[in-house]
Amino acid sequence: MSATVLIVEDAPESLAMIAEHLQENGFRVLTAASGAALRQRLQSAQPDIILLDVNLPDDDGIALARQLRLGERFGLIFVTGRDSDDDVLAGLEAGGDDYITKPINLRTLLARIRSVLRRSREPVITFDGWILDVVRRELFRPTGQLVELTSGEFNILVALASRQMQPVSRDFLLDVISNRDPREISGHTVDNLIARLRKKMIHEGKDAPIVTIRGIGYALVPEQSRGETPAS
Image (cartoon, rainbow, N blue to C red):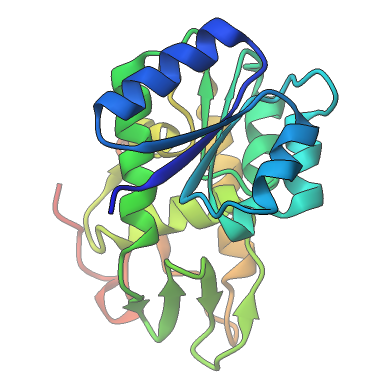
């Protein structure tokens, strides 16, 4: 059965354009033109992923995502004209798996949807005793304690954990959290999220297993391999 996408968009032309493209690529499409319509849809529908505009006529999409805990219940991609760094971080921290700015490239949007769906179906990833449950979007310490992560922190950690010992560039990590050209957004967005992850992942006096690869980006390196140089 094909995945179901709920598009929440108040601009009729954008809504029709996205819906048609997704239907042509095998998705079942539901639509809503407001926050109230979204709430009504969710009373009877369980979409696999929601495309959520931020500027709705009756709601702020980011506030709505927090209120309804959409990122905990569904795949969630914000699709909006608001493109500041603060907006991106707010969207990710509200539970968004991705944040796409208008004007929309339909091929890029399709790739982003498929990427979110793939991530939601990946198995549990383990490293250095840590457990990263990609389906439930949870991180557990080696002692079994749950670590609270924002959506942005979680998505970056999944990207690193999927390529253990392999360096991941800042540009790639920017791509994980935003579809915008990395030249148009500060690399400090990634650096800040990494710094927050490192702070949260200090365990029993040991530093987080995230190392900086000078001139490249970051890598997730188990403690026993810290002396090794990750492959480029």
